[in-house]
Image 1 (cartoon, rainbow, N blue to C red):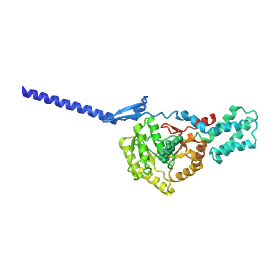
Image 2: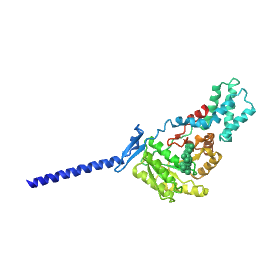
Image 3: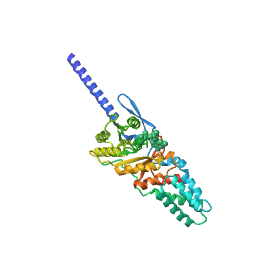
Image 4: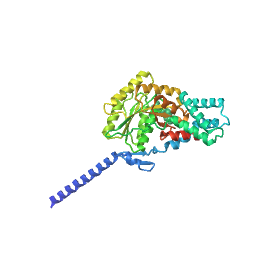
Length: 368
Ligand code: GDP
């Protein structure tokens, strides 16, 4: 009788232990399954991910679609000289040589560059000649819109490659310090998470003390894994580890922030080249995005040329377009490199990075 009771007690203890283990395993599994694809579908402002010890509040970033539309007033405000200024000049009763000179000056001040400025003036002259003396305000606006649009070139392929079959897509972010590289890397992670992608960030700017910390904060906010190395360590090693982590975790996209010290041109370029070669031991590099500060004008173009000579730039990110009247840089830099502007930064807010859309851009300029 006694031994039966003992057996029963042992059986109950075993069953209880098993049940507790199963619950614990399920919980741990649940905490690991941070699925951005599923999270992106949630509409709540934040969602909670339970881990064994802490509760992380992840933000749900704004969807990519419609961002440029939301931010268009920032573009229009700082670029009113292009839109409203040109429309006023073109609407004068007679457009004489002095007026054409003013039009030229306005375009040059907006950083369009000499070639594109001449081209736009030629297009406007032709369009307005066809219109004749009785130019309506609408016709003038349409002529300007068409001339600008032709130069921004809607035909360029602006697709961002952020997914690849059977491996993570790899995106390298390059550019000079201060242009907004780390911020752009963080904002891009949000954009990708909003699109349902799982993201690994590589903090390969090991020279700027705060860069890795900054990136960690961006990553933590949306649940992107951040791979870091020791301060002053080898950037290529961090990039390598980030891609390894992406492969191991089955991530969709690995985004690598790189260093941009301009100590010597050759030093920086050799370093970037090395980072790229080391990544390529594991994976193809799908995008090399060059970050340029739109407020730096001609200086930005010089930087663009230097980078393009050394790395195969696949797209341009123009930052700080909210703080400049030089929106013409979009046209100038595309002409200079033959590479499309793919993203634009229009503010310091976390979701103030938008996929570039030529029609939306020109409409914002012309609407003023
Ligand atoms: P990095 O040295 O190239 O990594 O530059 P950071 O990412 O640290 O950015 C430098 C500064 O530019 C920061 O204060 C950013 O907030 C700011 N910044 C970046 N992008 C934009 C933008 O699109 N608009 C504005 N207004 N500021 C920006």
